[in-house]
Amino acid sequence: MKWSNVFGIFGALALAGLLATPALASSGAERYIPQNVRELVILGFSLVMIAVTIGVYFKSGARQENIKGLWFTAITFSVLAFLGIGVIWYMVSLRSADEDTPKSYSIVLNDADVAAIKDTQIANSKVANVEAPIFIPTGVFIQSLEFSSANNLVVTGYVWQRYSNDIPADISRGFVMPEGDQIEGTEVYRVKQGNEEVIGWYIQTTLRQTFDYARYPFDRQDIWLRLLPKDFARNVILVPDFTAYGSKWDFYSRLGLEGDFVLERLALERTYFNYHYNSYTTNFGINNYVGQNNFPELYFNVGVRREVLDAFVAYLIPMIILILMAFGVQFIVTQISEKMSMYGISTIGLIAYFASLFFIGILAHLDIRRTLNAPGVVYLEYFYFTLYTILLLQTVNAIIFTVSDKFHFIEYEDNLYPKVLFFPVTLGIMFVVTAVIFF
Image (cartoon, rainbow, N blue to C red; front, side, top):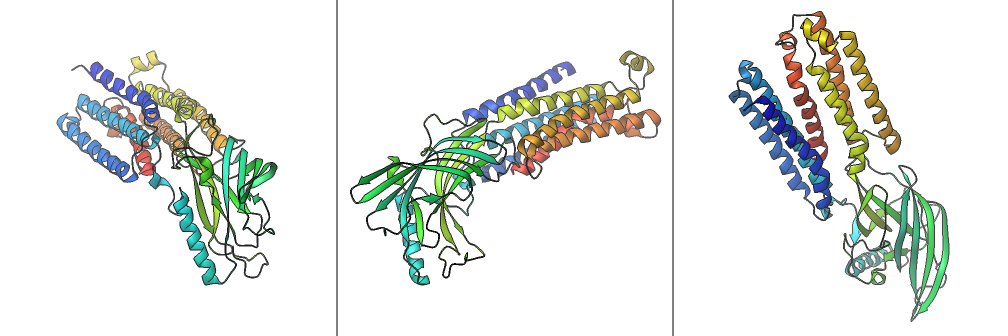
């Protein structure tokens, strides 16, 4: 087989993998792969990749520094690493699993779960010898969510509560959203139904929340509304009003949202109610404050995942082009005077070229930092760190190759090894980073 055909086959496979990953992720939006299965796939693929590469290394003659064998081994490892990254991307782009929800969340999905919460809190109040809990059914309907910054989002919608006749008249009607900024809550209806009164409010507020962007652009976020009763000192507990939604609630029914709900660059996955059992280091000056230790606070959550295509186009494709350009220059590095004259190569010119690629990469990298405003390093940034490392190694290689002839690794066959190892090193680092972060 001609080497041009080999390059063509592997190039086609690589391009197909890159283009198919977003499409596969989209088509698999309603499925998920459990974490333990993902871990087995990553581990198995890593072992297969190592075993195949070792086998090709020995069988192709690369061990004896056969040039074709070296290239074939490098191409094999590079394509396997590339496909491995694509497989991991596919798995993490699918719908999140129920098990991915933090175990600290006490999720309630139906009236039976609510009844269990009530029984527990009634029993706890008797043990603590405090006021018996007063339960107020509360519902949420979100009409719009819009990110105004990386950590701020504007929320509009409705919140309603049911007050039965046996709820004491001195219990305040209403709720509090602690994370809301400049909450605009307007009472829009008050309806008497049988032995209860239903009050509804239209809300518009800006929520300040901390999101985890560590896996960007494959990150998932839970946007949450924290609801507390107005009567701070009383044993009032808000419970989900499941009867108002008219159908069985599960993670992926997306109840509590507008039918044509749209989120820019994000895809809706699920909605659910849950409780956080929060504790405070103070009683806020209230003797026997019932909410100080493990008090259940109601949250309404909207789970979203990022649409990866936007990040691919904005950040990944330009970086791939930079890597290919860096390889193109590396491939023509030579000490053969005729070729140097034809290519117009000089050490200073190479250093300047690598510096220009670094400058272009750093601009895109800084744009990610400005957009996300993330406190740590996000997944996609490691690809840029890899690019910087490769450019630095290329610069060092160019200098040593020019000024010294004492290094066999660099001098062999007119700088062959750095050319052969370019993609295995680049894609190998990217695969390891991807496997570690998503394992």
